[in-house]
Amino acid sequence: LLSIGDINDIMGSGSMEITGELDQMVDHSSDVSEPDCLGSIFGAEQPVYGDSGYTAVRDQVSREPDDDNAHWVEQTAVLYPSADKAQRFFDNARSSWDACAGTSIAIDDGTDSYTWQIEDLTATDTLLTQITTQDDADGWECQHALAPVTNVIVEVWACSYGAGDEAADIAAKMVDNAVR
Image (cartoon, rainbow, N blue to C red):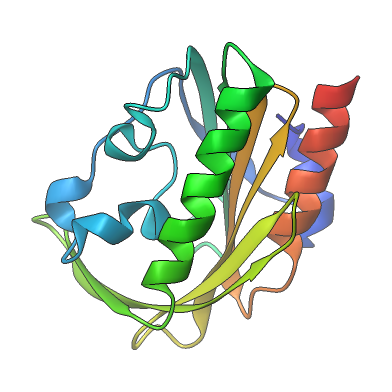
């Protein structure tokens, strides 16, 4: 995972802080209108990774400390027992994200409800990226990135008002860290 200094630099912020860390997957499948698109909307999800053979996960969320934060990042590293298993997960994610492109996904977590528009998938042999835009949120959007590196999957969400390639940049640095 990247340091908070690196996250602030990439996001163009000076005040983001780590606000959450997990070493296990979560499950938001009951919150989404299309559970088959869970992996396109949320990261580090047990229903998405559950049968893939992963052995460990580290997940970290960073944002500004105020309620109306301008930036939000989730970075996740998922360890597999082999590079083949990580690659298989990447290939399956590519198909799933592509199938969810162009859809609207409603989220209702019991407290808040909102809708996300999932844009087209951009894919190479080593990186998936996709933009999601929240309806009625003044341009709040996220770039989602996923990349395999040896026996690790790195997954990143980078959200702001007018997201660019920040998630892809963070994922690239995470890949560099994993290679070392």
